[in-house]
Image 1 (cartoon, rainbow, N blue to C red):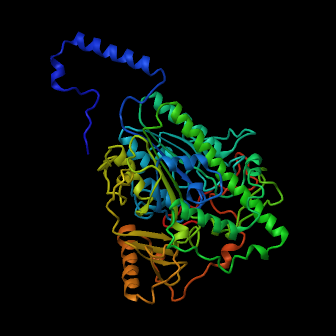
Image 2 (cartoon, rainbow, N blue to C red):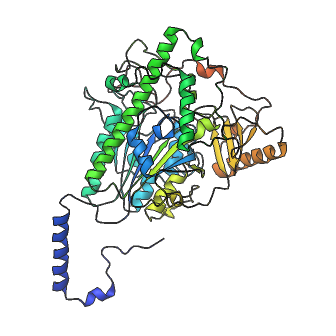
Image 3 (cartoon, rainbow, N blue to C red):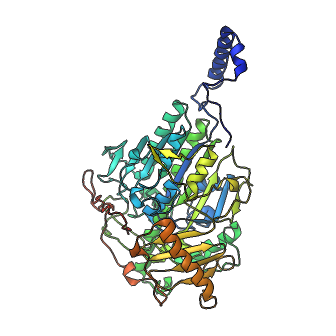
Length: 562
């Protein structure tokens, strides 16, 4: 790493200069700076600012620049001026993806929700002189202000009511309940992001800000004017929309033409088989989902415009990802209320989740490509030398983001923190991709949630759904996982499966109850997943009002949460 000379340290030759002369020169420099830059600017360092954004339950194809019909011009503009990754992975689950993003380690390797075996990005970047702040969904133990984030506004729960919030909202560690009549969570995330970033600029410090949007996670609640934009857009049904997304992905270079579109499974009815009322209901809820993504895009555009107005946009590294694939679970209640009414609690079902994960199979929680594939958009005008608008097919994972931030900031990962020696992170920097270079690949990438598991080594991937038998795919030829090679190549299947168990035990430290042998049968999508469920720990209550919600947490170490 290039060492930086602290501002207080001057080369020896300066000591021979008369003090008065030095003072005159410094005064002149200060005056020139004030004349040229009337607004506060981050002059303390040439290190980049870092803006890390995560959306929730957004499928691989739900941004326009990844194939969607949803209007996301601001996200698309970041992609056009930056790079996209077509083989970027998450963990297929909300809380575990946040752990990987924040710590650069796998879920249990980091200590699961307590993250007590790792440092967070907030702690690392704060130790390197950054102003650290966060807005949005936490969904982990303690609070962000306990883990290195100097400023925080958001909710500790795993989901929230978009219009009236819940009782887990915090501002800098203290309860917050200032929900006005025009409150909408997605907007407030960016309102406070702007405030915290402005504070860092005023302090002349580089900022590290992490936004964890709750959207478009259920409940599907959106502003009426945003929903109106999508009236009639989904009247042709999920098969037509999915086909159109796939065709757009081919044109965008997100998907290679050798990867065939996976078919609609039998448990999803053809659009024509639905009654008129059923089709209208399905259209309604997809329109709301689209409106929520649209609102995220509007707010990203608002934040980008603010960074430009403060003169810091060009030297801000922006990273945008999703925490898992689209969610197939039907948990709707309060259907009698319109989705702009806080009493509503709509969810969409597996039919639209299948669209969200185009062109892949399976969903959130599963370790097939539909569950673990995420968009990744990286944008950094001052640091990007790769071709603008390019698409990288090099694999990456959420564990790589902390290493990327440290690398881009020319920072150091502390060898000791709070008097305790730290252990190295698992991730590898993505910075070479931003430079248009090949980076050192991972020896393997490991995946696990509950009894869903997978491991990728090179182009080969083994995967097991819900404890079912191992499947084997060559992702260079078959990214959509249509041609299972496990019976053709049992030796390779066993070798990679054995490696999964080795990594699970020795690297991740996965508890024994999640390392049981797989079954002999191929699992299909469980019917129970399509039934309505009650809101679990950390979920917002349908009738949530300030001071009353279902925001309690189970908090048992080693327990995966739904």
